[in-house]
Length: 274
Ligand SMILES: C[S@@+](CC[C@H](N)C(=O)[O-])C[C@H]1O[C@@H](n2cnc3c(N)ncnc32)[C@H](O)[C@@H]1O
Image (cartoon, rainbow, N blue to C red; front, side, top):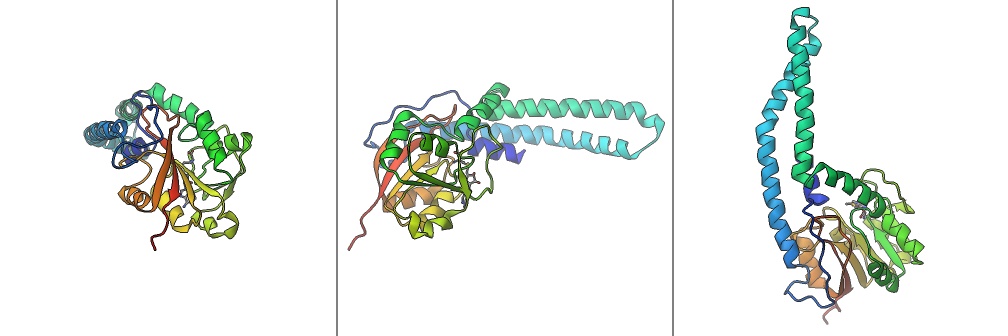
């Protein structure tokens, strides 16, 4: 169950809203804060609370039935037959109901969960637009970290971008239909002088991945695709670091799955003060 809550947070709950079109110049004091994301974060908290209380309510019932069914498996007594059969049926039905209801609470509906699987098989965790591809091309050559199955890599390569992509294979999303050329490697590949002149691209990072990359990357241009402050792709320390050491020079909309609020940020390293 906790995994469901985590997935709801990392791969975005479905609310049905589409991302707004963004202009070049950020208008708030933080370029990584915007009203749609702020509203979405509040909605996600509410959903997470619902999911927690649902798990609290249904968990003990499920556990009790599971224990009865397990005892039945161990007992060969015929007199137990009917009681066990009905416990098994009840357990199976409850498992199905729990799966359906958690999908509804997490994704909005079971349909949305299926649509998401289709979406990720084409795009990975978030989708590109032609403008986003063109902007990345303008900033090529590219080194991509945390590339997953390489959907972005494949599309960028198809668009004529010089790109080399890495993933440490620690938690790639489930196997998808479309795959790019992704080498095995983590942020330490960025120490290589061969990659230092490339723009760093990181799409939909998880945990501290982007912060770790920035500790190794020596180049001057970063393209980050993901949610802003408070979103699912990095914590406060990431956005503090970005704001302290990088200037946002361009922001573009991308094509998130329902309920996602990812954007594309082109950032340039701030000059070191003398
Ligand atoms: C949320 S997935 C996003 C994958 C892909 N960018 C996409 O949009 O579909 C994050 C990816 O980062 C990878 N990853 C996590 N930590 C990493 C690290 N230290 N170095 C390289 N890849 C890493 C995981 O294996 C996973 O494939």
